[in-house]
Amino acid sequence: MGNRIIFGKPDIKKEDIQSAVDVLRSGWIGMGAVTEALERAFVKFTGARYAAAVTSGSSGLFLSMLASGIGKGDEVITSPMTFPATASEVIHTGARVRFVDVDSTGNIDAAKIERAVTRKTKAILPIHLHGRPCDMSAVMSLARKHGLMVIEDAAHAFGATYRGKSIGNIGDATVFSLYATKNITAAEGGVVTTSNKKIADRIRLLRSYGITKTAWSRFGKKNNKMPYDTLIPGYNFEIPDLLSAIALSQMKGYARKSARRKLIWDRYNRHFQQLPIGLPPLYSEGNHGMHLYAISVDREKTGMDRETVRRRLNAMGIGTGIHFVSLHLHSYFRDTYGLKPGDFPNALRISRQTLSLPLASGMTEHEVNRVIQSVKRIFNG
Image (cartoon, rainbow, N blue to C red; front, top):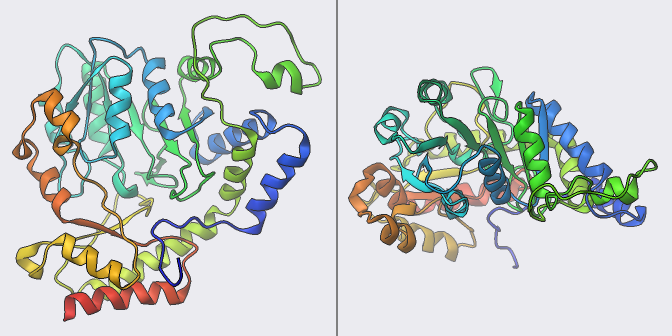
């Protein structure tokens, strides 16, 4: 890739590599003791009572909804400003998606949720976009009023807090992603946290074929127990120890990673505040996860559209991302639910204007400076 700054480049250290090597040499690379250690680490980190590691954030969303009793004929309220997986997993359960527009931050507009509640509504699925927590006080209050489950999509929000509570210890279940670009990564994987034992037990059963004993309990442990029974038709969503080891190592280095991301975030803010672009909105309710640093490019203010800026940065060797194109503009959701672009005006505007700049704890000073100078060059002429 030459001198190109790769968007979302993972911060992999020698300790992470060694953790994977250790598992490879151990003789047990499937889901086992290391995955159990990762789950304990998430419990300690978030304050939730239980954690279940799975193959991806997407599978975590799917299993969380199934474990919460969501299925055919039900409705789940969520935001269209997200990656397709969020809504797709609702559909995979047999339920129907009901979208609610976002506010100026890109998070679901809590004031508009109640209008979307029907007798079929089973859950609210708030998305902590870019790492900024939603208004969880309003979401939880509304959910309790109507007897709804709250399943949080925290794919962007590892390390975020809301009013003194960790994201991961507020809703009925919270789903984290360990995908390659996330604040901590295992290349792929996910973790669900919950303080509801029934949900945790159900997820663990569903992820492991619906059987009573995992391979680790049958073959890996000294007091192995066989045979096993099939209680329900489950899935194979077991995350191997090989990936769990990387994630566990990444968690141990999280304080350094978080501090580095904040330093870069603050430098961007200082250098860009005089430019005619929108910066990530301030957050005072806790800790922002700082997963994505997204600017807003308004053609009326800048004289150019988002795509022009993206192309110019690309020509300078600066990788960027778009997070996201609102789902109501995607063919499937548009056609299935009969949606129009103007149905969610805030999501439409953000879809057209948002552009994510490189933000990674492994970025060098030279790379950070290149991003800053490149952006300033574009908007200062």
